[in-house]
Amino acid sequence: MTSALEALVAKAQRIQMTEVQEREQRLSFVYGNTHIENDRITREMVAAADEKIQREEAASRR
Image 1 (cartoon, helix red, strand yellow):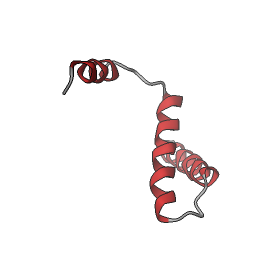
Image 2 (cartoon, rainbow, N blue to C red):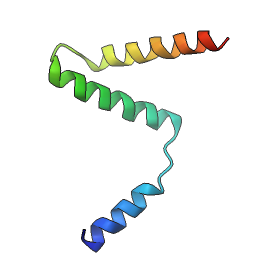
Image 3 (spheres, rainbow, N blue to C red):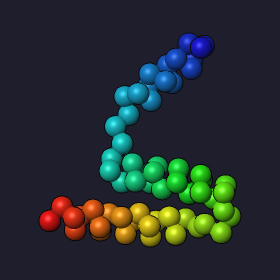
């Protein structure tokens, strides 16, 4: 690994994402992977599914 790449990796390891950033990253990952398999999947569908899961998890904690 070059020293420039090592520096970038070290910098990336120190980044602390907010909950919003983590959700955006998760949705982007899910969309990218599901869209490869089924091009009818939209970002909106992924976001709606995520919101539904969050509501269900919140309800189950009560």
